Amino acid sequence: MLASLMEAAGDIVVRLNHQGQILYASQRTIDLVNARRDLIGGALSELVCATERDALQAALADALATRQPSRIKLRIKAGDALPWFDFQLSAYAAPGDSGELLAVGRDVSSMHATEVHLRHLATHDGLTGLPNRALLSDRLRMAVAQARRSGHGFSVAALDLDGFKKVNDGLGHPTGDALLRVASARLIKALRNSDTLARIGGDEFVIIMPGAVSSADIKLVCGRMISMMQAPFEVQGHTLHVSASVGVAVYPEHGEDEVTLLAHADAAMYRAKETGKACCVVYDSTRIGQPEHDLSLEAAMFQAVTNGEFFLDFQPIVDARSRQIQGFETLMRWLRPGLGLVPPSRFIPIAETNGLINLLGAWALKASCVQLKSFQSVAKRPLYVSVNVSPRQFRQAQFLELLDQAIALSGIAGDQLLLEITEGTLMTDPLQAEAIMHKIVARKVRIAIDDFGTGYSSLAYLKRFPIAILKIDRAFIKDLPGSEKDAAICNAILSLAHHLQMSVVAEGVETEQQHQFLLERQCSYIQGYLTGKPMSPHSVLELLAATGIPARPVCAA
Image 1: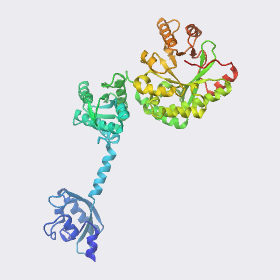
Image 2: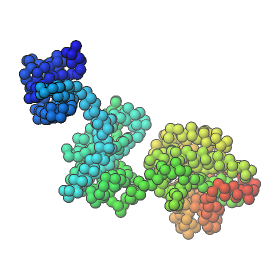
Image 3: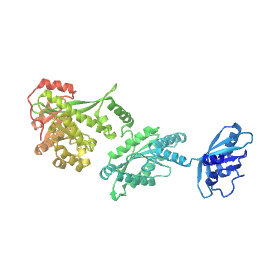
Image 4: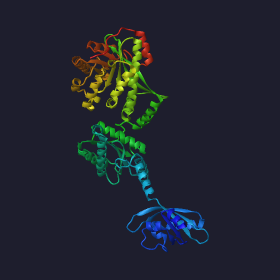
């Protein structure tokens, strides 16, 4: 019975003398180590990895001396042609004064392999096998510490694939994933053995380049990466073309800690995208804004959404001739407790980048439509509300569904809603934009081009897309009527709109002279401090209750 229990107790059961010689070995032990000779009389250490034999002897001695179990992890050879196994061995002093020991071992190879795999998953990207953000952060801290000790700098590069989103959206995520794997392999080939390549999410990569601090070194390494990306990709039967934009920050010139270096490299990468893509830009504080401000602002934005710090103001849009209010443009505001208002020029681009714009835009659209309903109940006449739609929100798959929800929730008519989009929104993907716009117009909702003349200003899209209104940017209004160039631009826009049967709203009208100039040229509607500053919903209700002027037609093409 005792022998049976010992056979079932574990993978290894041996009895040893005080010198570690085997006095008894279970059949499981013999089978496991594939013994071709009698184990009795041999040393247990002979089965153990040579580098661990001293540790084994120490554990056996400790068990005899303390009369307490002694545990140690060892690698044991399972036969000459078989691999090593990881074992957890427990040694016990036998009762009495014989000086013998009993050692029981359990094979933990599979557990060890699982631990190694889990550690790898925790520090590496599951798609490409590259280091992930956690491991990158650790290696960046090590690079900073080493650079401080040695006095030798290093560079951090942020790389983003240009055109990846179109591949992912147009051909599906499996194709996008396959492209990322091939791109990762190309980048590895372009880098030096000392460099670290990490994928931190989506199509974003970060590279740590030890010793690459001169312009020549940076140009050489980054140039190879950009060149590798420019060759066509053959992925799942598709020939794909993407490029890479790279931004670089150098230690210690551009930062002395990992957070600052990453932020500056990221800012430089976005600068590379703005200057034509497929290029490398080294961070320069005189040309690139300080991103640490944006980082803190971004963190505050997420909290602001939870705390309800965003609100809407409404600026009147009036008939240029009668000055009667025809509608209101919705303007998003952010009031930070203790810090005051944050300019939209600061928080809107950040929201566009981090995806918050979809959440904020959805809220603004629904809230604007609901608010319009209350405005009309007081005015006793039809009005409209004009809502800005960001490029990211416009391309969102759920945008049309959101539009239907806003109209249904508020109970307004479709033609009482005007969506303002920029020229850049149209030109990013004209075919997609045209399809979405026709679906919007089918709901009777009208579309305005905001800041007309400051973007692409392509006359072709005015004919192609269903546009109802052009909004002249305030940049062309502020110097009227004194500026001949601005006057010529406004004349051209107004003439063009009239011939295309579009209405025009002039933004930023602040003086009677500007108003008179626009009125003489048959500008339909004006918006600006002359006729009304942005105001709260409560102030709008008070204004509408006080006017009560009979309605004129709402803006229409």
